[in-house]
Length: 81
Image 1 (cartoon, rainbow, N blue to C red):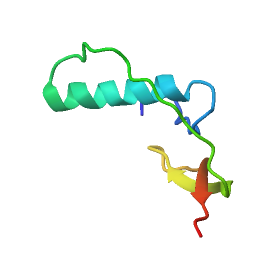
Image 2: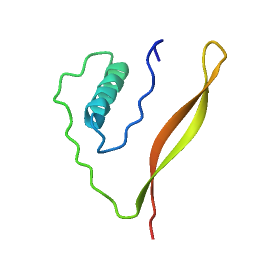
Image 3: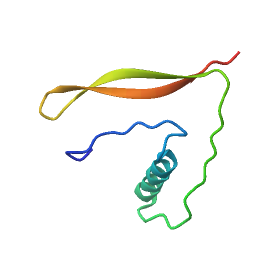
Image 4: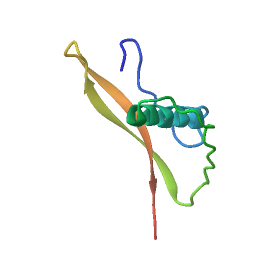
């Protein structure tokens, strides 16, 4: 990650999620094939799932200067029968 930037953790349905997901996929395409992606952005549809719960946890990241910083990560858990 370039200096001055920070990771952003989004959840399906969050504002900007679809756009950042497309950017991530296009970057992976360019890395894999060595050329820019020239197709249309993908469209996604996210559906609510019964029993889904959102969890947040903290991990600690060591910086280049040796400091340790907390990073809050949001995720989800599907409880299946």
